[in-house]
Length: 310
Image (cartoon, rainbow, N blue to C red):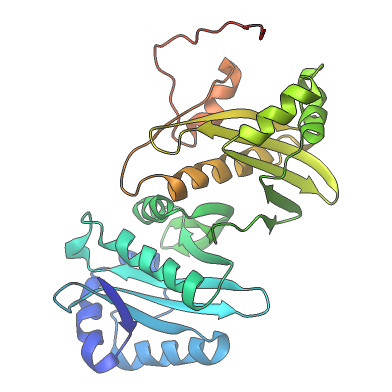
């Protein structure tokens, strides 16, 4: 597959046949285009967003040179944030990995060619098939606006999703700042003791930080308010550890933010198109929290002992 700019004379007659009913149309474009699609209206809207936001339309071509997908892309140079719009693939090819391949090429273009630091898209929460596709590529939910769009008798939420350039160490998320891999032993112990009491020794903690696969910390201004870390082998197994949110910041979505960051790390660093065993340990009352991310409890019992180092 490869990407090229959209050419109306070559591509529209194919793309117009991908939107087969009014609900699919609304899911795709929030009724920004007229339904059914017409060439004049389609070109008019594309020209409008090009002038206003700098959007460029692209098609994804299969190995035979036939259009298999479509999207628009724009970049805000001052923030280095890209935005995908109107992502759609040929419905006859769904379930064949076409959407994932197109999005990976699009993300590569955004990072390598346009030099974006982060790329966003918006999707209706009820469009679960699209959400799963975006998640499989590495997009994570940033926020969801409930009841953002009305379709007939239904009310849909609109979810903003983001994927960040690998190596980006700090980014804003609403009022908070998320940092990667700079959680210190002192910060770890401070957060540990805010929830669990006496923490581990500084020497032990410093060694653990040095050998952790991935660390996430969240700040409110200059104050660290949450942390989580991932240990594992990058190939077969990942294990989530030490998910901690200061008590006064709990039930504000910070815990969800931590888990999304950790799962995004797995998706972006594992072998493409493989399933990777990702686990954690949770108290019974916390299990529903993790179930919303796809975790499930099995019959295995966790066995442990504390071994004293010599």
